[in-house]
Length: 395
Image 1 (cartoon, rainbow, N blue to C red):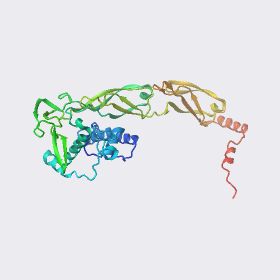
Image 2: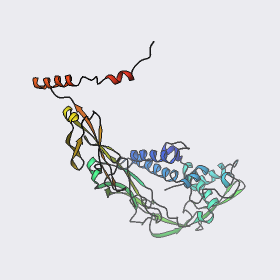
Image 3: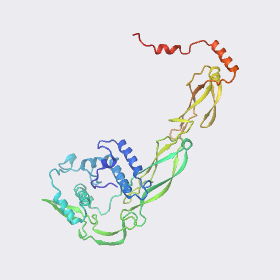
Image 4: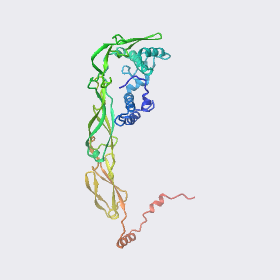
């Protein structure tokens, strides 16, 4: 969930401020896997880092949110990407030369929180009120879509070729069943003593006067008991087993989407999506290149010289391949539509067969005699052409 706390999102993701979308996505995926709660059970520090990484990615991966963050140093949904009318950069008000230190000291004395906590919250309220008008004091938060989740999945060669259905164990944030996402327990409410139920407080900073959302009640004017199950978050982390359909012909590095299986939304917002990066294991014989299958087949000298019909393995079984007379070592042949079926394109690749000539094993005198006779018949110098290619200039 994006917030206005003073956090350097670029530093959190370990990228430069001019990083493009692809760099940000790659860094996020790496950090998400490193600090994911499933891979660090019981590690609260890793869980907190994971949340910060998710928050940073939610802002920096969205062009409009990133514009706001780059302009103001934090993100708030109440700030339009192009700023608000005024004298500051991009149309926002110009606060250059203004000293907020007095204002912050007042906030810390009255708010009772630490400096860092009050600083993040108070600055959010200042700019929310300035840019968002009455929306900053809305008693009901706006619905917000939940964060997406990233997982990796290993599948073997044949599962990728034929397609399959797998079960993936994930951990996601779900709406708290106790408070139904409100973060509050029970219906007992009390008037907020800090704002006397108005939802706003007045603060002075030098000669300037600010009407801000009350930091204690969040602008509602009422205090509610915190839900003991989710501790006021509105969501709880739970494991879940998700069935994922692996389409036939999926390639290594493909990214599959499972709609609605990301983290739960906020204030009734829709959940995020689950994205799965597929890693396909290699096969000891079949090599895949896109939708094509590549194989190497040994060929005897007699088969290469006289021509032959041989059987070669394919992912569908055996297929017959015609070898013409005079076939050379390393020569490649194509078996049409014997490669991988691509379910998205509804097309099928080919199998590329490369022949590798093998010299005969000489175990008897008869074989030697035949080879001698062949040498007498074919007296051409098979290496004659190479000398013209490697000829060195005269000194």
